[in-house]
Image (tube, rainbow, N blue to C red; front, side):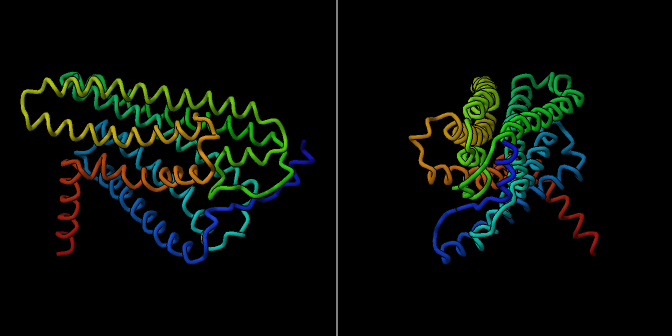
Length: 312
C-alpha cells in the first residue's frame, strides 16, 4: 500500500472543462465574488471587534461565522482561480489533502455555528428576560470551542481514512478542488469504510443540526405569532425567514451531495452545488445575518463618522 501511495505526488484538477474565453469570464466573476466576500465578512468582523455595543452573544457567534467564511473562501477560491488560468497546473498530494481537510473543517464548523446562532435567537425571543442569564459568556465560549473542536476532529477522521488508501492512477480529479468524494474515486482500494463514515458523519453534522435549527425556529415563529404589535411581528418574521432561507439552502444542498444516491446527481451537477457553497453562502451570510441589522448599520455609521472626524 505504501509503495503504491508514493506513486501519487500530484493531481490534476479538471475544473469546468470550458473554453479559454469562458474561463476568463469566470475568473473575473469569481474574483469579484471573492473580493465581496472578503470585504463583507471583514467589515462585519471589524465592526464587532471595535464597537463595544456589539459585544453580545449574538455578534460573538456572528464573528466566528465571519472568520469561518473568510477562511473557507481563502482555502477554496485561490485554487479555483489558478485552475481557470492554467487548467493543466497540478496540485501536490499533500496540498490536496490539506485542502480537503480545511474544506471539511470549515464546513462542519459552519453547520454547528448555525445551530448555536439559532439557539441564541430562540432564547432572545422566547425567553427575553432570562437571556443574559442563559446566554452567559462562559456558555458562549464553551459552545464556540466545541464547534471548532468537533469540526476539526471530524475532518481529521476523514483525512486519516483517505491518507491510508493507495492512489495508483489516474491522477485527474473531476472537480475544481479536492472534494472528498472526487478524491476517493481515484483510490485503487476498497473505499466502503470511507463512504460509510461520510454518511454517518453527515447524519451527525447535517441532519442532527438541521433538526435542532428547525425546532428552534419553529418555537421562535410560534412566539412571534403571539406578539401583539404588528410591526414587531413583521420585523421578527422577516429576520427569521431570511435566516431560514440561508439555513435551508446550506443544509439542503449538503444533504443532497453527501446523502442522496449518487446516480441521480451527475458530477457536473455536483460542481454547480459546490459553487453555491463556495460563493453564495459566504457572500450572503454578512448580508442576511448582519448588514440588514439596525445595530450593525448603526455601528458602521459610527465608525465612518469617527473616521471622518479624525481626518478633519
